[in-house]
Length: 163
Image (cartoon, rainbow, N blue to C red; front, side, top):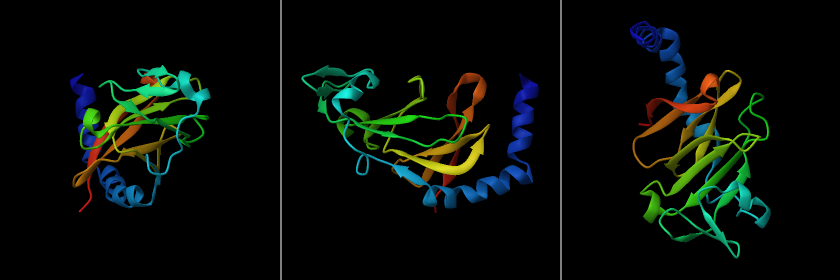
């Protein structure tokens, strides 16, 4: 375990990693954004995809028992994750200042990421054929997540200063 931590530490301090990190603010500013103000409302046929919510008469109730209008859209994460979807459950009372519960599903509707945020920006950089992503949050930095193939999920990689 110590060897793995040392290898990661050495990579993150390498010029290659530092150069990649220097480009991340531009990728975040120029990436494709998925947020509740640009995504369509969920349709009745999407009801099975919106886990952890209660559907009654096509009305959805979030984890805080507030009625919400979920948003759902295809999301292009690269060739290794075709047919992925993003679901936003908007409720700033329930999910804090960021405003939404963000859920990303693969083409088989398995959860790849479930986190609070204001949406997702897909970056041009990739890990194992999957685009890295940034979660939209209030503040002066943006968290970047990268793909971990063995875990079949995204993992927090680093926070990028946006100043």
